[in-house]
Length: 169
Image (cartoon, rainbow, N blue to C red; front, side, top):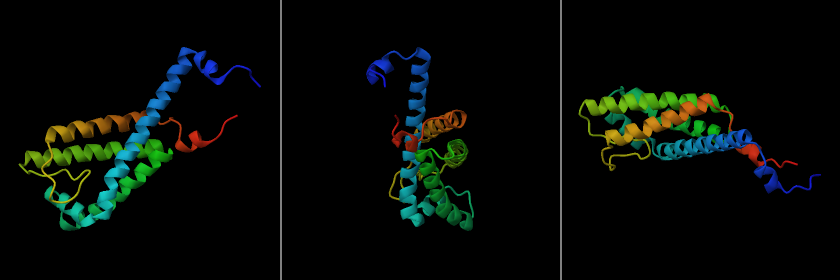
C-alpha cells in the first residue's frame, strides 16, 4: 500500500507516459464521438426508411431495387458500426468500414452535384423538407470523418468503455 496520493503519482509520471495517456484519451474521444455520429445518423433512417429511400433516389445513381436495399441496410450497418465503436469491439474493422463509406459518400454526393442535382445529402436528416446540402460543407465534414476513421484504423488501441468501467486496485 502506497502512502503517495494518486494525484502525486500522476504528477510524477514521465513525459512519455503522459503523452501516451493523452494520446489514448484523444483516440478514445475520437472513437466515442464517431460512434455518436453514426448512431445519431442511423436512427432517423431506421425510423423512416421510406423517407431515406427518397433521399437515395434523388441521387439518381441506383435502380429501384438498389435504392430500397440501401435504404433498409445502410442505417443498420451505421448503427452496428456505431455500437461497435462505442464499446470498443472490432475497432479497426469498424473504422475501416467508416472510412470506405466516407469515400463512397464523397463520390456519390460530388457526382450528384456535378450533374446539377440540388439535393440534400440525407446524412443526418431524411425526407424532402430539408434543403439542399452545400457541397463544401458535406466534403469538409466527410473528409474530417475519413481522417478520423483512418486514425482509428491506424491506432485502434484506445481503451474501451468496458475497460474504463472496471475497478482497478
